[in-house]
Amino acid sequence: MNIENMTIGGFAKSLASSAPVPGGGATSSLAGALGASLGSMVAHLTAGKKKYADFEERVQELIPELEEIRERFLRLSEEDEINFLPLSKAYKLPRNTPEEKAQREEVMEAALKLACEAPFKSLELALHTIEILAELKDRGSRLAVSDTGSGLKLMEAALSASLLNIFVNTNMMKNREYAKGLNDRALDIYRRGREDCVRIYAEIVEELSR
Image 1 (tube, rainbow, N blue to C red):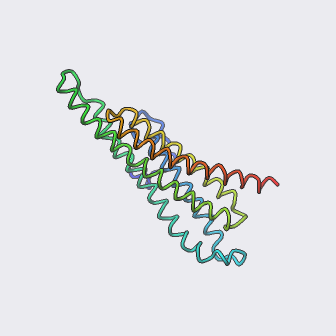
Image 2: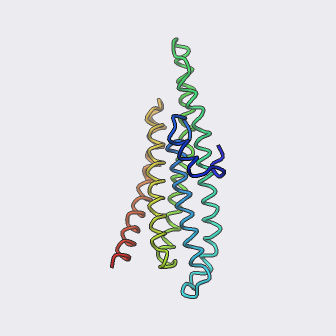
Image 3: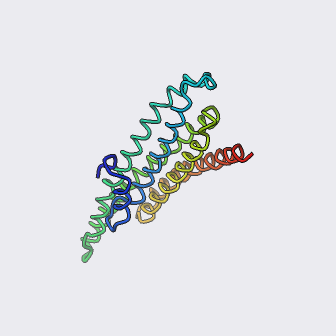
């Protein structure tokens, strides 16, 4: 499914169906893409303005970076769908004999690991994007600070949903050491990103509610 060629309504309709994809993982990456798009908008509204001349050089670097981040999130949304399909098939494997059970368990374990890859990449990318949005909050156009805050909330959603899409897969892994290691790394990224989101969003609310 090429998400870039889908309408918003088409994606929402597919999401609402009983089809295995798209699901929460693809949607979390889409939230990240939308958050990056808002950051890109703020950067464009800041660029070329005399009031922010001291930020001009940096904002010109951020514009293409945010556009690339948006594209990466969209690719991750598709990657999540592709990576989930082997797991969807593994659920249906027979387990009537000890041999079939062992084969199914092996296939499931590999599929579960694969299903964690895209949401983990989304977590990492969301954390990086939050750092950029923090820059825009401090130095970007004050007229668009609400858009920066909205972008941060979308990044927080991307973090939260990506984390759950990792946990739902690691929860079923037989290799508990591997699962715990991945969970710990994911949770660390999530906590760092969410802490920044909550703090910066609160600062924006304070600024706009004065």
